[in-house]
Length: 151
Image (tube, rainbow, N blue to C red; front, top):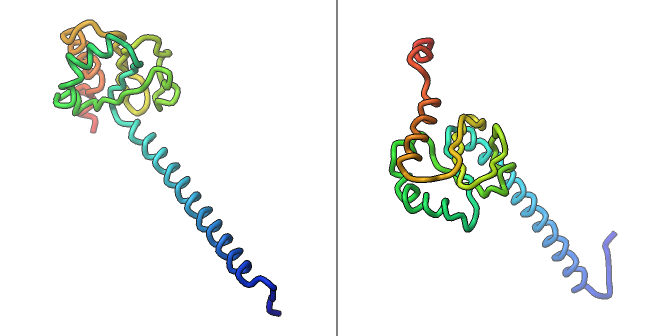
């Protein structure tokens, strides 16, 4: 049975609105799936060894670290072993890291491996102290010669 109406243009408009609505729903579902996938991949990236800098806006010690160390960090051997990721201190629960204790001061540098804290440097005084403390934390990540021989 064929539908008839006194307003054929209205029927065409309703079909257009329905098609537009369905297209919008499909795009919305696709966007949500992409966002979910990006979240899963981001959490997966957090599993590798990394250096997480907890910072906050207006922190003078964070700014000092940026001037003295941050500007060259990416070009160092430490950066190859521990890529730097910055997290606002208010977002520490969403950092994807199991912390040994809450971060209270900025800057705090947490060395994480497989999503778990290995160690941390709280505060920043100068570049020599930072590099020395970071080297000690990097040494915790490297397996001992005895562990290497078990393979």
